[in-house]
Length: 338
Image (cartoon, rainbow, N blue to C red; front, side, top):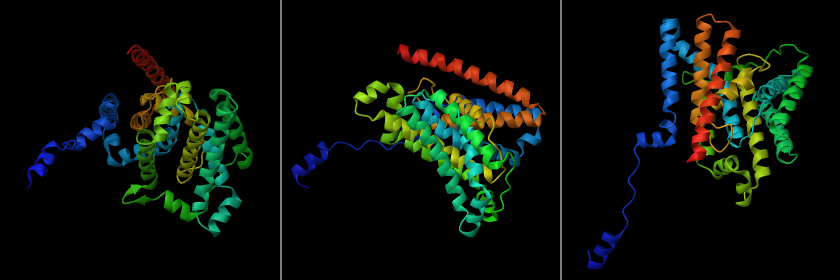
């Protein structure tokens, strides 16, 4: 080796050390959400103590995850909305409208003669369209998100009842039920969809320009506008994304049962808030949202196994939401001081 080559080799900057898998996980949010993980572990201990083998059974654990799947996918879309300091009260009604629209007799007949995917695409299309309407009214119509989504909640719920004539719609397309309601590699398909949605949401929020713009708008929309971000267009896209997630949740739910999604918006907002996404915007966590959904699903399962009434469950959920918001206010105040 020549002297000059040896000198260049010595002067070459050393490569940064490769991050270990544990450090990657910590950076991905494990450290920040350690409190939620501890809370979930304590709930599992509580369930095992109060319900015994009925709770600790592996089938029951899979039931908890399966029940969390639909709420989880819808919550991922809501995380983006709340990160920009918005709110979407219409996700439950949009899910109901998407499910009803996709299961009309004509829709099922067309899916039966072509492919069951038509029903899934219909549900996602209806959800995305409803979310897009929300986004246009909020971003360009300058209507407050609370009022806009409250109006969409009423309109979507009413339209769903008109289409279904307030009757349960039975799905007769067997390939759809077998594909979405079945298992793949021993895991329920809806759980796999939840996992894929969570991974996709995490990447979109934390590893893309779209995610960085979302945090920027949530932190200070005027500063984001001055930085060249098209705030209105981005806001519209986020509400459309939330509607799309409600549509995905609709066809996941269709594989299990037909419901109007009543009260889903409460569970979704609670899961996102408990997961650490600030209602004031600028901070959001998909990993935290997933943990929040699992905490709520586990809590509901424990209540059910201990024969607690639905009224008690609602009171407990309301109390948890209030406590989470109070903790958030403390965190936001501490964040503003630093």
